Image (cartoon, rainbow, N blue to C red; front, top):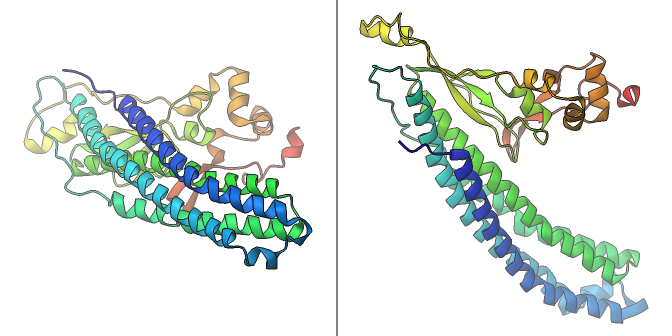
Length: 336
């Protein structure tokens, strides 16, 4: 049987979605740039006459505002479509991966069928909410940059750079939304698959990519056990996934009148992320924690588990985050 690498699939789908989002943003900027350039040229020519009153009477000012709103709205629509496609596919992979992992725990000689979840959280509603504010937020930020720049006498070229930077923000935000919601869809379908098989699945283990560029909070979470009823509340852009923890096959088969005392446990072992961190060289540990946290950890004043924080957000829901030194009650200046 061919083994499917779901992480590779998701990475490939993410790259395809990123290309689509970048192309959509490029089209938006193609629309915005000429009208912004026209306004900036008028502002240069105004010289000392440039003021808020002068600006309010320029048709090119209102044209820029409306163009930014509509161009970002079209971009947001295209980016949302790319995100829906990717997240929907990831949800399917999340279910397939969870079922494949469960099938791998079935001992040789035992026949067992696992159930697929009957429902899933709404992807489209959540993505609509996350993308809906992009046009207005971008228009408001760009308008503020133009008005503040004009009132302070900022050179028009500087204002133009500020507005372009603001118009780039939807690109970065769209990529974050797409990547975050793709992984959320994958995890949520994995979780509901485990829950649909709670007669076999007791819980799940947190799996992080153990590497120097992984955040310390995720490394600390790697290998931690969670009940099957618990969702995986990770942070935006997180790459972490889950691995099922099954009941013993003796417990699973005993209610069916089957003696499974001689069947070995086939659940995969998951090592601790903290143990992995402890075994890295000093340079890797320091790059993960940063100088002050590394010094505090080296001094014994900070455990890796101490830096895992949890927060609630109207935007992203529940998530973990890496606590600052202040959050854990330490003064960074004591470790410099």
